[in-house]
Length: 184
Image (cartoon, rainbow, N blue to C red):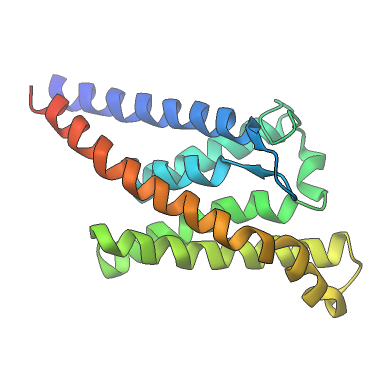
């Protein structure tokens, strides 16, 4: 019984650490046009290292913290009103990304190379959520969806693919270290 309790504590400690990492990396803004944050990297890494459920919990806690007003989102902002902003669809998209990844893992099985495919599928859902929201909230309607794609998706495809690939590589290295620590 004690070993199971210890394992549960460690699991939730890891989730807490990934929530903190997501907050910190969401604050990091790389000086490109448009500016890039590393939130997607943190969320993807949490999915890889904690599994689908742990990743979903991480994203949910992160979003809940922002919703209650903690300044956890990019630009040190928070509050439920931020979900109604032009980028609110991307915040919800983070959760959809995690849900897509977790569902594909559960249905199709989890494998090292499959993670990249599942992440790509989740990224498509994330982009759809964010760009549709942006088109309706910021550009004023569905007829501006193509313009929304040009602003909210096209500039981010390569950087986001790099973030996912980097998370994959970091995961491979950290997984070995974590397994070594668990076997001691």
